[in-house]
Length: 346
Image: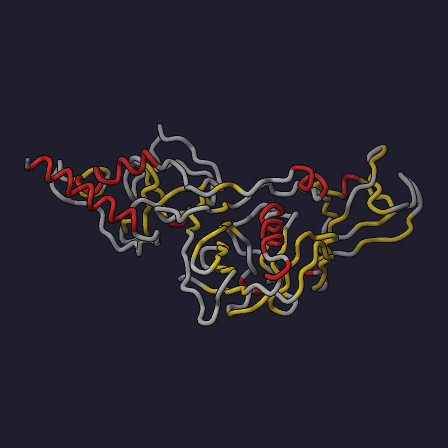
């Protein structure tokens, strides 16, 4: 009878934990330091034993991956010119007819011949001065139901540790960059937070970008987007229901994306982005899925890098091609003036 009561009590506690909305742990929990036999993988044994069935039942987050359009990736895999500028010729080994300046400049490729590429009609450049940049195949997640635990993405390939503050476990699988995981528990080693992502698998917070849901800004209803500058994570909501989440790349420290509440005021299926001067000049043709929300600052795809989860833009919010397409279609028609809330979780 006592055993039955214990099982019923544990089941009630587990159901209560799972019915609560997922939220990020504050990371203030201490590493279990009780007597031998009272701890399992740095947590109190009873706590860990309650979590173990859930870790085994939920090996990965419940979001559906955003479909990746391989043809679109091929079309938008362009070429970066030599940052020092290049000379253009009328034919392979032909006569000079123009130039492209110093800066961050991308061009298409009409054809290649004898070590040369036609980057515009009748304008050629040596392939040695052109760097092919494949568009990123990364994509975020669509949610049909709330996640039962907080979610995060790995920012670099990592082997988990069997305990917080311990070296990586040599026999543990190497988890790929952009892998999404649940955070089942969080402790702090005095220097940083560590997250339990699976059975006996701990990762340091510095290797992860966490999905942290903000409180809806006052007056915001219907569909809205949140951009967390601290975690470099974008989330989309219908009311208070999470429907989409992904990694982004916002403005770098000297070009920081402005915090505040905005509305999308213009949308373009594609646009040419350019600006800056000297070495900071950039020219990015045919950027797909552009949504302006703060003057000239926009949510848009970025075919020129695969560094989502890190701030590196000129102020705009970069998304992968697949994610930008999903967001562009989600904000279409009646929702063209969707709210955009730019905030910092830490």
